[in-house]
Image (tube, rainbow, N blue to C red; front, side, top):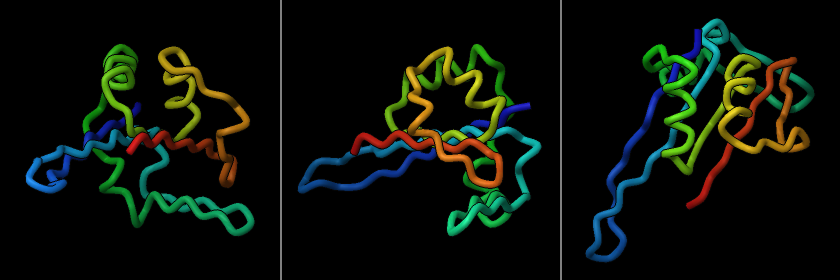
Length: 107
């Protein structure tokens, strides 16, 4: 199973209201675990609530990925589904304790 959560935050730039969004998608079996590799730590215990959203289908994931610009992806299943919707360069994927992780941010 895969979980997805869309985070929304309203901020102000001058007198304009701006909605900032981040989509987090993660393999559900990774939640609550901590992965380490060298100096890198992927703490899905401490940051569980960031990733733990609703269960989503492959079709829902692909739709969400095409709608959002700021994306955080964790897990083999998640990356496999995401590569069907996005062009992901494998050299940009970090593997932390054997768990693939990639972030896309367009501020």
